[in-house]
Length: 627
Image 1: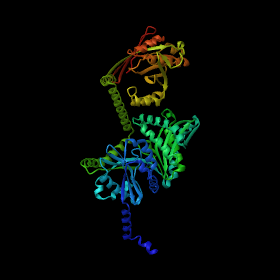
Image 2: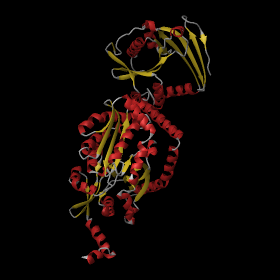
Image 3: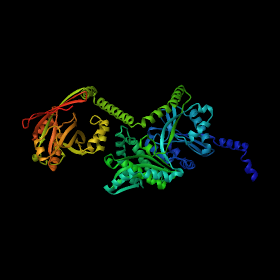
Image 4: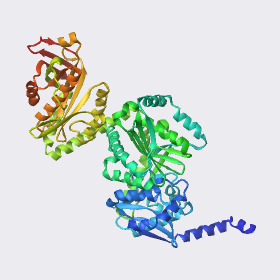
């Protein structure tokens, strides 16, 4: 027996063993029906469990959830390799418009083939040969989101030269993570002991009952997912990006994941609540000693509690007690990840090109991309380290998105020429010279009476006025950039922090007006009554109103709401009205508002300003100038 064991270590016997393993991989089946792929689910699971570093994205549950949500738009082209009757490797691919990629991507953060480690090169070789020789009509196969630990990234170098010549490896991005290893306690103590985080956590606890918990059932998840989707869209829109949750297919995918993964115990859907009201959500996975934060967001209207940072603190607190190997922040280059991560992992894309003229040309392009990508990555890293540069690019991106959205809407409405002329005139007014005259109407506090509800019905029209929160403004900017542009959102949030309120008027569900109201002394012209009585004013200034709707019901509902609020606070109500707002002027006069003064503001090159104020006969004439 001892002699037999010794001979197993000799080169000749080792070579014979490799040859037998190679011969064992004898055929590859092209699977185009997902029901056929489901027949291999138990063997898929066996192969996945054989890898102690396997990601959640290579599970059959992930692939099935993805196929149910997105499969209608793709053709399945999975390559299943066999040794006799046993499945020894699966390369799950899908095809769309001639391009192949892993089943489950780009939604998966990491991708790989499913097989045993010792047969990875053989499985990959047979699958690629089958792809090149037996699959027709494809233009390129992209193996995306490969980590350096993936079987593809570690073994494609072992392929025969003829196959390697069809492959091109390109560095994709860096993903941030916290490696625990032996320094586990030290790492968590450093992350969880931050004084700033403890301070904001105490602030939240003083506001009410705080609870962080993980969803246990798919039925419970269904209650929290709508809020998660809404706030995920808002959170991305405020920085000029489109959320994946804006697509109905992705929302369906997330629901499918809860049904597939909650029973396995690998899904961690965490919710941070204040008095039962969700403030933040974390959709994460825990598998093989690793916690991966897949998607997360928070309620923008709870910004004063810093819910995003508190959510991260709670997930780290959970990981301290349950995670042994790694805390992965997932895809994305958000700046906060640099503050917490202690390691960044490169991911790669491996492109396979067919034996055709088009394949050769795309291969040349991928070779150039492989050379240029490290330089571009370095430039991005330098830009990320400079906050001013990040803000400039963000503002440029948001302005561009808003401009293109407005152009598409104008083209759809057939008003592209008018939009262009109005845009040119606005650019001239804002950057070179402008003159703006405004009449200010007043309703003194002593004469303000509560006029009833803010929902007004007139001539079959049902208008509603409601003070909007910041999240609603984000929705408005993303869906209707002609009303509010994305790059105006930071200024909107600043105004709301300073106490200004914004009112949205809806006519039969359609937004017909957006109006800003400030509370405080009238700074444009002194009021004798305010100086003597100390009464402050509610002032309606800037506004947007639709040009395609009848405005009278909207103005009537708005003034009704403002008069009711002014009456409850015993404030003077001031309304700024420009000469072109004929409908508003007529309604103000009908409701007994009195014209107090006219302000004319001049701007030259957006820097030099002059303002003149003329009191109407009830007051005196006064002129002030500011530069």
